Image (tube, rainbow, N blue to C red; front, side, top):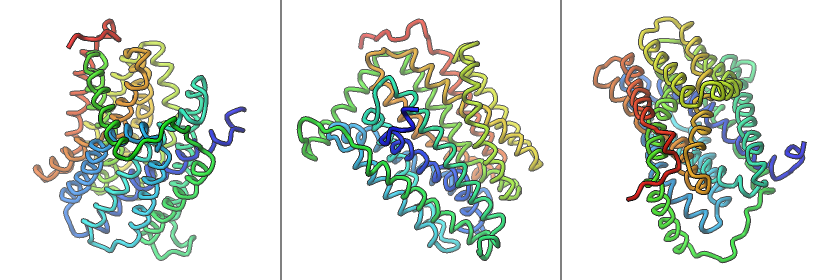
Length: 422
């Protein structure tokens, strides 16, 4: 009960409740639908998929380039909370701005969405790093789990309400589904803003002993990135796993971001696709717990391979499916392994890194996990454009799972934590 009565812990965890609304309603749900039907109206499915894939990849690449330096700079200067609130504010404003973008203005929509996605991801970086300021080390697992739980619940609840608003706009006094989608963007921004306030008021970052100038923050931050990267290179087992993880988690995140767009390209109704996304949202959390038991019984690496095999099946079946009912089945399949592959990857990585370097190593691990989806969306977009056939687009993601699984094979646990001489 201690966690639930600790104001700073609850305030920190509620940021997950706050920002998950963007991840679920905007990123995975309504933006792909509205982008294809409204902002890219009159354009063929392959072209709109290419545009959306490019926007997602550009946002992820921008974060990938920025995040290591940002994290190190904020950490060295004690400015993590300020950075979080800055990026949260940027994401909130950009999300609300989607309401005002007119029909056919796909370049503006893609740019504003990419800005919101970058801000969302960067705020998550600083949110994670604030964990050390809200509880004792022995409570980190419980506090982190509380954040995940509130994120699933909060994101799912607002998304369910927004789905009802879009499917039955008359109940809310709205003129139609299009207006309801635009209003949902504003509701996400308000939700994100309101539930960020507790963190702003009640989470206090530990003060550094010395005040670091802005120039000093930048210089020390960049030096820290270089030191950490050089250190990771000396641990071959961890480095090989990170490469494998980057590949297959890119495939996972690509399916999350592009599934609705793909289903619409096949002619499935947007309402059915959104409901399928809700299924994935609520199946994912308990499935992650079940995968923990699977990992204990047969080993985390084997459990990851099971999840990769399921995702390969999803890409093949997705290429061949013809009925909306099949999309629901795929939604359940993805939900069963989405949380599991993330959970087992984290626990497996913890076993193959030196215990005294876990903070640094998990910094890179979290970076890869949160800022994936660089290759996959672009791969889907270019495949759809080149072959003029969106079915091949989803099949192209299989390359990431195959490559990730192949690299994972070379992770040698027996050599874990042994530094290489370089």
